[in-house]
Length: 82
Image 1 (cartoon, rainbow, N blue to C red):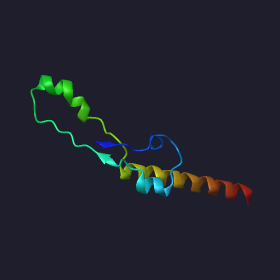
Image 2: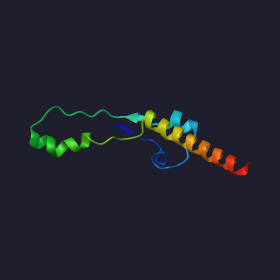
Image 3: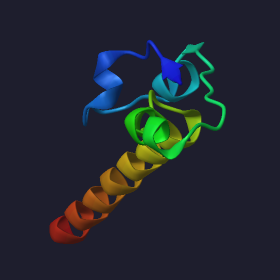
Image 4: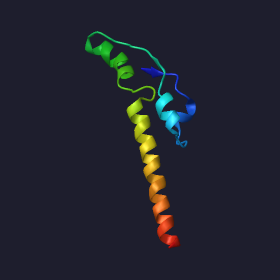
């Protein structure tokens, strides 16, 4: 589990390169469960199906997407003004 990232990183806020380099979840926890009977797994297994925190790959992908969107907006604006 990735923990303790800035709350703003979970929103659609504009990202800077420093957010990508330093903003990923800085704290980690490792949680495991050994195999169990199906009835016990059905009650506890859901905790292992959810992803927690923000990893570098996800944050960098969002940053790249924002950069590409801004570039496309600039190209459209430039085409409209020429």
